[in-house]
Image (cartoon, rainbow, N blue to C red; front, side, top):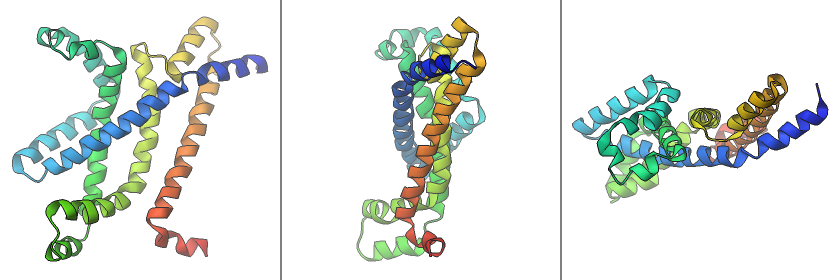
Amino acid sequence: MDGDFILRMFGQILTGLPLTLNFWVLSLAGGGILALILNLMRTTRIGNAVAASYIFVFRGTPLLIQIFMIYYGLAGFGFIRQSVLWPFLREPYWCALLALILNDAAYTAEILRGGLKAVPSGLVEAGRVGGMTRGMVLRRITLPIAIRQALPAYSNEIISMLKATALVSTITLMDMTGIARAAMSETWRAVEILLCAAVIYLVVSLIVTRLTALVERRLSPWQFAGSAA
């Protein structure tokens, strides 16, 4: 392998890292908010049916197809091309971000639902007896415990979304994978280029894994007290 070429490819692929991180952070933020809304919808019969259908569709279909449906499919509807949303939906960036958010929300909603089910009902009842409103119980008791319970599973979703951002390169976006694909088409040296991209993704994943482990320790220190001793 050519060491100079590999170093040059590392630098070239790293120029796509800001876009990759942009998609990753915004998709997690938007997906988390939408996931919370979906779980709040489950408190009513109609809302539960809508949320369950949404989750079934977006978990049951590949993310790549969802990206294509939004980027290529929506343009086929005249009322969308004539709407105020068209200036955004005709841009690959917004289509990719929308697809990532919608997909992440479906998985995060299920993870959060598991965390909400793990909240002891006695704590909720104690909060209400203590004079808390529903909003206060949700903010001070239910959500903190649910997030703490869901964090181990959610850390896997965080890593999955980082890897999922590579699919935005299929609609002309030059993230790290997009730059790697363009370099391969020019040089035909797939092994070195893909190795560089894989190493960068691995390093970012390792950093994220360490950070989520630290957050988990801060939120649940008693679970690690025995191992620390």
